[in-house]
Length: 331
Ligand code: HEM
Ligand SMILES: *[C@@H]1O[C@H](CO)[C@@H](O)[C@H](O)[C@H]1NC(C)=O
Ligand SMILES: *[C@@H]1O[C@H](CO)[C@@H](O)[C@H](O)[C@H]1NC(C)=O
Ligand SMILES: *[C@@H]1O[C@H](CO)[C@@H](O)[C@H](O)[C@H]1NC(C)=O
Ligand SMILES: *[C@@H]1O[C@H](CO)[C@@H](O)[C@H](O)[C@H]1NC(C)=O
Figure 1 (cartoon, rainbow, N blue to C red):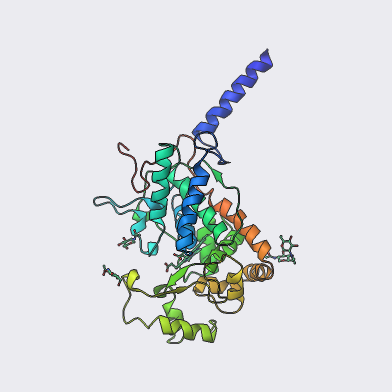
Figure 2 (cartoon, rainbow, N blue to C red):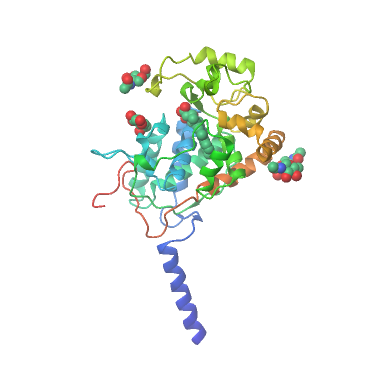
């Protein structure tokens, strides 16, 4: 009898614990909205069919979301009145994929009103994008809740000219390590990059008046033909030309270990990416990944799951947003 009582107390305790906070779980919506993951996958796949660059947009959006205030969909919130949201910050430059998240959200609201968070939608859509781009499909823990705060002042992302050390410091602040950094940067095997993020490497590296000598000559030449020397700082990124992140193979939308081949052959676009070749542990890891794509894709999925856990809200924290672009009324 006494042990029954203890058991009930314990069960109640763990139920409450689970509600108020706690870990994410795979298939969190299996009872409350079982069609969730199918709907997300269907809509992402539809978009991917007409635009193979969609996974890149989603992946970067998810990273920016998780890096700032945790994976709470704060990156999706629009500015309102005089309040500037995260997405107004300079590094947002051409973040993309917002419309896809909106489309999934509106379908899910039709079928299961108020159940599925925008943070989970973004994380799931990214997971599906990774698989569509050629990465592994991984079971993604869900149960994230949406945040209610998005401030432009909170955006302190690592920059493209950061050293590996400086980027590592930024990653450490969200409990990610050097291996996570090196592995996740492999995402730069897909998608676009605007000239403004690396132009100085082509013309005037660190004020020397010369190109970055670590960049492969033919890559530099080809990038210079697309990226003219800017006469002044480009403020309108939509007017800035863009190139493929992957300059080492002919697979701009295929998530593979081409990023590491690029690192090892001076074909990285961003300075930070190229510096992986000149740091002890990261250069060995790049070599390992360049030799074994399976190894890279496995580690990448693991690192994505870890990224997706950063600073999540669970249980009764935050809210389930009705519209991914705005916090609910009355908050
Ligand atoms: C750690 C430091 C990082 C820096 C400095 C960095 C920097 C950048 C920059 C400057 C761009 C070009 C954006 C544009 O011109 O539109 C970019 C694109 C991209 N980044 Fe990163 N990134 C970092 C980490 C990551 C991580 C961790 C991921 C994913 C896990 C990621 C995924 C991507 C993707 C997929 C693109 C292509 C986006 C597109 O095609 O729209 N990045 N990144
Ligand atoms: C990014 O920030 C700029 C201002 O820096 C803003 O004009 C633009 O609308 C933002 N982009 C998105 C997608 O919100
Ligand atoms: C930025 O450039 C794009 C493409 O050239 C143009 O359509 C848009 O009007 C420009 N925006 C601003 C604020 O100048
Ligand atoms: C690279 O691979 C070797 C051989 O499998 C392993 O011993 C080493 O720990 C790996 N290094 C890194 C940094 O991944
Ligand atoms: C590549 O990595 C996978 C996954 O870790 C491993 O099972 C396989 O043995 C590796 N292949 C080679 C050729 O080292």
